[in-house]
View: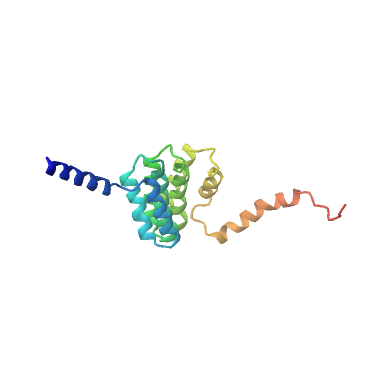
Length: 175
């Protein structure tokens, strides 16, 4: 009887000691790693959060953060595109889905220079989110696919001229 009690106590301790960190703990470790530029550890922590807590409200944010690190910090643009696709395919109604879809087009256009994929991504984005705050940018990107920044400057300046000309002049007199 005493041995059964000892074994059950050891099993309880083992199970308690091996419990997985909470989603918040994974997120905190990942953010700390990212802040200290330890991107490998940050990616590992985000992936662990997703694997161990896929239904957590933080899982979508972790997926988006993975894509962001791959794009912004590691400059692994093809991998980032796949990671952003994972966000909107896994969480099609999530709060990060629209931006993830837009960024697939943006990276394909501006970093990877795959214009056909960029065009498709922007068209998909506009079909699904025609009134999203990034819709204006998606339309602009579609109209200017493949153009270099120096090619865009004259058209941007021409667009801005009517606004500048019609803005009322501010009085410099103090009252």
